[in-house]
Length: 260
Image 1 (cartoon, rainbow, N blue to C red):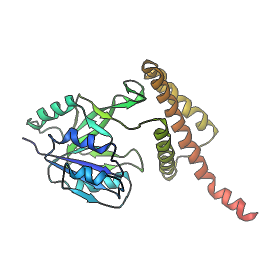
Image 2 (image 1 turned 180 degrees about the vertical axis):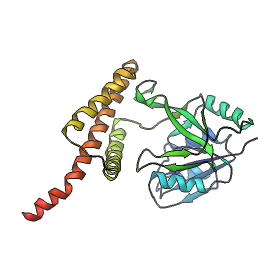
Image 3 (image 1 turned 90 degrees about the vertical axis):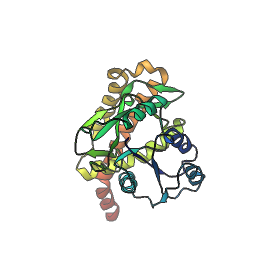
Image 4 (image 1 turned 120 degrees about the horizontal axis):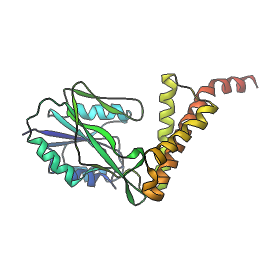
């Protein structure tokens, strides 16, 4: 039977992390928590499930998850966010996977299903939000930018069928708070990669994002929450390119201020 390490990074996740850890407690052979200085009950809750509670100063999502990966003992690793839960059907699928003997696959994508505004979002680009989270430690590492970090696999990948449940935003206010943070990080990634913003991108990219989610991916079938996801996704794109525009014009603004 395959042995499985589960990793979770945390920071003040007392409201969510217990549910996440409960969903893997009968499946994981070890659970590794990497915490970046929580001041709530996160540590006490986590220690109810594991004694592998490590503290590490925040180094960014990618580096923090890579550090957690490096602390694992077993060949197979499942990376879980504190706001994610293995559905009962996914637990069963993983129990069957642990007994398998197929050695041709080095990583698996899981379909992520998000709960938002009181319902599961089964359309828009939010579903199926395929996430590569189960992988061989020897074949995978974390890559990407400040946001949208992801596992890079050297080898073959497959897909599991049952959903990873995502409780990302408790309300609209939490979404907007995260939008403020993530849009700044994404703009910095764009700027460093050489991307630039302007009026056409500020107008067309958000519009295209809305049409993709609401029409192409049938967000209208999720009612008001589907409309909200489509509008908020469009707003997220707008603020990323607006903040990118701010970054690219900042040197000129500083120069003009110095002259005045």
